[in-house]
Image (cartoon, rainbow, N blue to C red; front, side, top):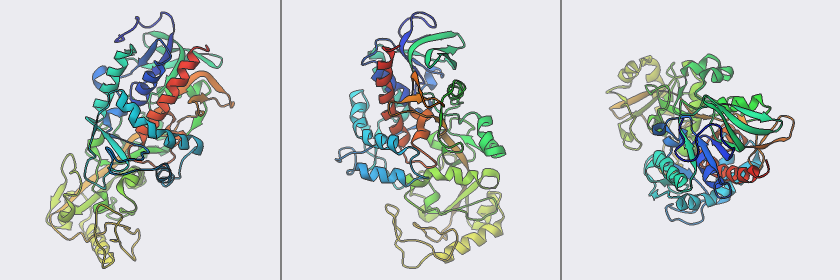
Length: 469
């Protein structure tokens, strides 16, 4: 355990602010804290090549803006708020969610000042050019950029270090327990992610279905810090079964598959379960507002598996599957390749084709008027007959990015306790407190928004709290 800068660890005099976690939220918190605190330390569980947690798998951030610049048009507070309220069951805590939306407007400027560079928005599946800003080089470049900024500021980084517990005296944290000893701290920011990599924890809420989940996020996010906070009386926030989970290729690795494993074919074809039947509206809304419901949709199907089917007409409208799709000259042959009942799948496709409302104009860029009628579930947009060979298909599993159940916080990012008070010097930012804002749905790019907004809040408040201890 060796810090990149600063004094030897552990022991020594207390650090002003110790940040647990070196992803986006933790790095933003540390950089912000350093404006007022002299001695700031980031404790990162991963070794340097894998540092950054789920931030490594990101590529854009959603934020309010009034002008175009890198965007293709304005995106107002009211519109982002409506979008957030329109996913899942809406915000968990409207006051904290409103602050996230409001403060998102200043985040791109803050990122630019700390070295982040931008690129033009990507084209593709119902693309995000107006609502989201893409950073050059993706998440790994973002992590590296922030680490360079931290190094310039003299922030110490301790890689390969797992925090097992907190040293508490009443309502105050005095240090962090690691495998090499105790790191003393005057204030602590918890930015260590969710518990998605702990399959046993997921099994508490999902039962045996959890054994079929794939974790496209970091294998290091096993919830140890959340569990430690709970043990010391932290209050909970978020849904037990709430998570950001998408449909990913069933052949993906169990952990850390990242964004490349996601499948974007769903809006342009149909999805069937292991019985060969459709079970949800594939064209309910634009993909960036609905892609994250498909992990849960598949999690609730038999065997936690589903199959995306499409034809040659639409094959160039989205990024191809990382491992390549099954391909066949007929629907029956395709079903056989996927291990499905050919008659059941052929019947489903025939029924879908017959239900498409005449006169629709297919347009992948908007909510078009191509829909079905007289079929359950409907397909509200982008409904076209699946009738042009070759036909394609991919098996899908739920791919969990992060969980929402975490710790409750105040508007100052201070961690609440079950008795209604707060810890005196413990703060939280990012996925560990996302359940204060998200319920069951997700908006593309909004995880980085939460981490950036609350990283700044937590870092600023922790630097003040360090002087109170």
